[in-house]
Image 1 (cartoon, rainbow, N blue to C red):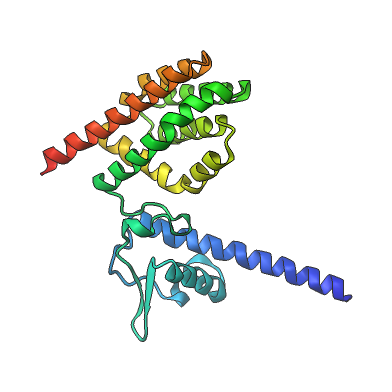
Image 2 (tube, rainbow, N blue to C red):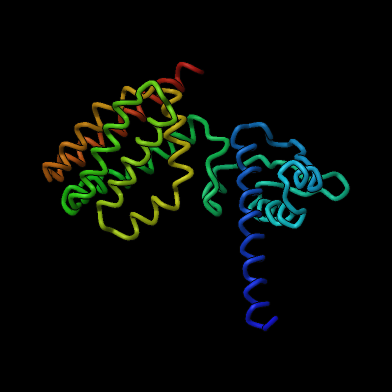
Length: 242
């Protein structure tokens, strides 16, 4: 076999290993995300994970080491691997989701969104093309059709805001929203859980209409009202829980 063919085979094997490692990473992440594995809990051993997932121990080890490096997991010599208590300061570390998000974290994210998305809506109305309008209309229709089907509604809600970011034609705004994908998706899910899906539909309708009319100031105003209303409702829930 030629050196080139051998090198090609090695590259394919390496790519497969990386892909498998990412699958293991996502599996572990999902267990923490679903609170099957909670802070302080010892997770399954590398051997057990390897058997359960049908992958090599090397792939499991790579995924675990990555999570240790990100301070999601901690290895204790002779004891095993444990889930860490995740603080808000590491939620952006390598783009991991807000696994332990609560109402305080929701407010942090919503305040951040208020800073970013109000101006994004204004820029989108000024700059977006017909494709963006079509994508926003499609997202809005999915929201209308799936008020009782949370996963589809949440995905469409998240995608609606992503399309606005894309419509700004600003590479940094698009990149920031892309980086925060997991956080924003999970936040939309939690808001839907706390407030229900219907409260935001009319507000999205107004934002969409303003963008279609290329009314930048109105788009910004409706986006601001949408996020502020959500913030106020989350505040009300917090006060009730006290």
